[in-house]
Image (cartoon, rainbow, N blue to C red; front, top):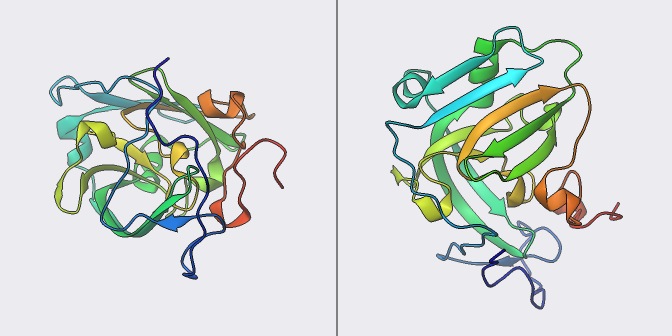
Length: 203
């Protein structure tokens, strides 16, 4: 598997209280780190499904998801590879809006997110509800580029960015946790940057 530069390297320390421990401000840059080839996805063929422990499994196409109430995130993002980016703006739709459509069965505790490429990541349900997560297609007012997950990615900015799966295509609600790609390969199951939950065994 091809892995782009930047997954390893010497951590740098920042002096800004907006920086979680071990992070540095990447400034205007936005590093592209991926363990897979970048897909080129036609929006006319794109769909995203939420299923599993929901009342009404639902699949949205490009037009359908844009018909939902729009929402935006303005704030910082943090990557486990030690860069942070301040004052980002993403636009799309809140996961709360999507889950309002599908309903959530009471036994659901976790989600398993899958990308078009087959990439997966796991999250507690509590980390994608109550205004904490979005499905986004614009960055700084422009369409999200393929190398950053366009046309659509998951955005969970309070966790390390590997949880914000690029090229999202499915979110399955489950009554148990199951590790995704990076979690099986040593990254932390949750990934809180302020607790520096980078690897399995971190607090």
